[in-house]
Length: 362
Image (cartoon, rainbow, N blue to C red; front, top):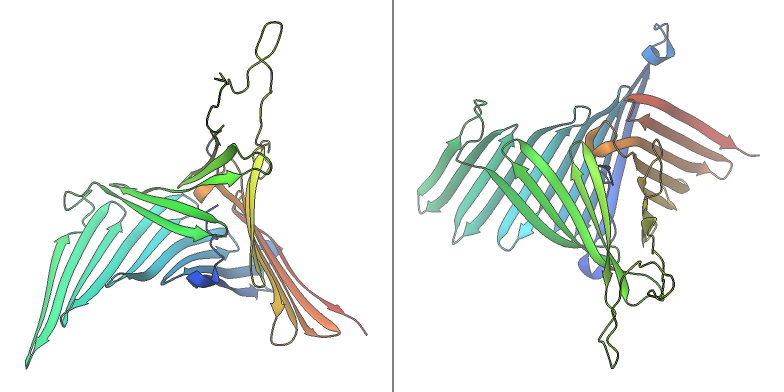
């Protein structure tokens, strides 16, 4: 299928197994300004809205930060921080969504061995790579700090004879084991791919499904492939042709098996994650969407929140994301409920709808 867009996991990320100390947290910070001196509604409304989602599993936290304005999708950042053995590692990745374009990537790591601290900072800004190595320690009344610099930011292409890097990460998500591959080249961000396998189909033990989602800056591709296992051949030697046609003196016809979509639903306490891929969607229809929603008790009463990301095949923005939809409600008292919603059409780069309302009973 054509190039199309998840992640996520602008948003993506959340759920957990208690044994892995996994959790999903987030925030939505919105400021709306109204200028009554303007002659048009579009010019009178100013909006700044930031949505953050953090998936924590074990000693690692993965965060997506999306910033929206009245002009549409403004910035997109991803962050990761955790420990790997004795090393502490943090990383940040920034995109310009509307171009779309890679902005920067940095990785900071540190370790302390026998009282001596070592650190490293790698940065890729556009196509300029820099590396900073440091060490420090104290011996009696003497303290020593050493810093070594490599590369520059003069805009002359790849430095350090650096050509690229590929990072592989395996982690649990819902009921599946996910493998992720993050790739950078001399131009910056290249792609990130999430893959899983062994998706079972009820009552068909010989057939499982493998799924792969690849994000590039201007597209997202979903690939679903079958994995057939008919077991050991006993007595009879069967010649099986998947999807063969029938007729006189012809093989028996089983017909084609069509997978039209795939979805995933998970719950962590009051937080629910849903991901849906509809492979039958036509042009102009959303072929994939991810939602995170919760219904829990707030300070004053029941609190509900829903965050949705929708994707078009062949969209114009980063990862082909086309629509961001946020809704919330808070029951302040038994007779009063406050609600607010925000919808941004990323495809047209427009702030399309902002709703504030309340419901009162007596």
